[in-house]
Image 1: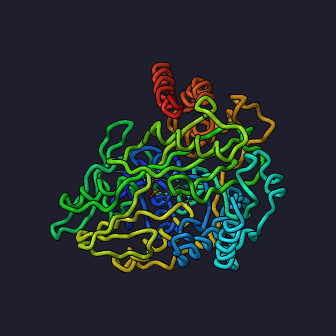
Image 2: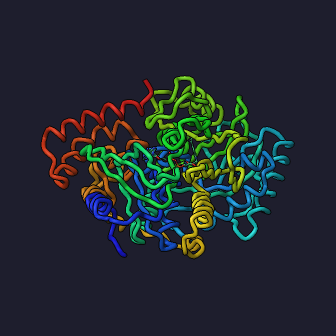
Image 3: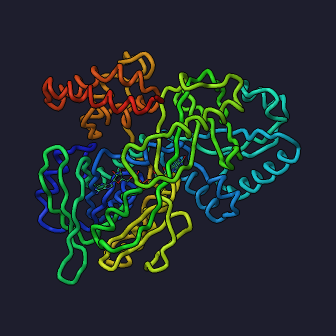
Length: 501
Ligand SMILES: Cc1cc2nc3c(=O)[nH]c(=O)nc-3n(C[C@H](O)[C@H](O)[C@H](O)COP(=O)(O)OP(=O)(O)OC[C@H]3O[C@@H](n4cnc5c(N)ncnc54)[C@H](O)[C@@H]3O)c2cc1C
């Protein structure tokens, strides 16, 4: 079946009309859920996916935008994990060359010992990337360091090491995966929250209740297999299956600051391997802005709009100031965005089907398949592992995974000649029409946070452009002035949270 683009009405109609159970129902429309839907659909299985908010609203729009093997894992000596991620890095670049590109990183070194230490570490990275290299690492003199990163604070480094990884735009990749999954017959719906799980008389899961967040209409969706890809919220879904189950994940948040490009005008990113609290921090050019991140702060409860603390913002500003010639202040921050890591806890009582130390797949007594952990770079492999397990359990007649060399679809970009709706970011009227018509954008936030990245790049500019965007969406969806007003005020309140107080 070929469906052009994502259309919410069509998806809801398919959910209503389908008499037989779906082979697979996926809960959660982040990177993991969409990757599972894509893997399942390309194996010829019928698959539906329900996302309680917008696609990518959770962690998947809030990453550091790196396609990487994981220098952190290298430091931990987890070489298999790094090698596997480097292989996936190459696949992503091959399958989505329009989204993923090579990026050069500088590791500034304070002394000769550090240059030797990080130089050797990056040679190991090169070795693990054999056949999947984005470029070889090399040591650089102080002169070259300052030429590559002209705004590096003088005196902070005595040369450095260059290495290569990839950069991408997380939500653009997400929508391209979703468009490809839809073209293979997957039925994807946003603003559809799963509120209950149903079991047959043998205690096996056989369906869910889901509520349309726009109309409050209730849907009963039957499925032979249910995959819980709810990211940091996966324990809430597991509790719907078994209220007595132990928690699988602990949440920790990571904050990013976005600054004007003047602070860091070059094309080479900076990787600070050890901050004052022992973390690894990146300073990266991103969409003509600069991204600084990230922190790692344990939190009690996952929410869809996690908030950076004052201490996290100060820590990132202070760390950036050590390395940048001009020290950024709170007033320079254009946007602050925060993502939540689902850190997998050990649970010795569970029947574990852990396929790597980076992601975890658990299958409950009733058959709920929970997949969590991992990273954006490796979601394709995570989804393959997950569906391999599902197929082995359910005995679906399905071929092996088809996604390793699957070229992803993408939208047709609007021409550069069109006038932008705001001087600070490129966003045109056809961009909005396209996103509403083919990518299920339902409101101003969908458009400014995920179909374009304005909220993440410049929250004040996003507030300024919101009325125009609300009008254009209203025209397409047939909404009235009251809707426009509430969209503008709701979005303005949200965007204020992306600015430091
Ligand atoms: C700060 C930070 C930086 C990172 N940077 C990188 C990076 O540079 N490179 C990299 O490779 N990886 C990175 N990662 C990791 C990567 O972002 C995550 O692994 C990935 O986004 C997780 O995706 P997910 O789909 O599992 O979770 P999510 O994106 O959170 O998706 C889960 C979805 O489930 C939905 N949901 C929850 N409950 C329900 C329900 N009842 N019904 C329906 N839907 C529901 C939620 O609304 C949500 O959209 C980073 C992570 C963090 C936190």
